[in-house]
Structure formats: C-alpha cells, structure tokens
Image (tube, rainbow, N blue to C red; front, side):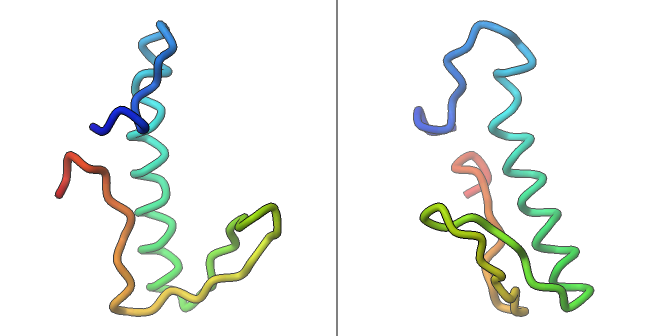
Length: 65
C-alpha cells in the first residue's frame, strides 16, 4: 500500500480503514453500474452526480495492481 494510503494512527482498526474505504468505493461503483444509478461524489467541495459506464475503471488499491 502506498504511504499516502497508509494510516499513521496506532489503532489496528484504523490501519485497516484505507483498504476498507477502497473496497466500499469499488462496491458502490459495481452497484451503480448494475442499477444504472449515478454516483454522488464530492469534488472540490461540491456534490456531483457522476454516471458510471461499463468501461469505467473501478477504484483499486496500489496492492491490487
């Protein structure tokens, strides 16, 4: 995992948080793709609806590449 995605907090649960967030983002994209629902994300402090197409890359952690 890249250093920017690593939690520097001592709590073991917090060490797992970055990977859990990546898994949740991946699953949200899968569900949005299956249901034809746009994702609602925050970009530059503004909520934006983002359509998810068939060829959109799913968020992956550096370890999965």
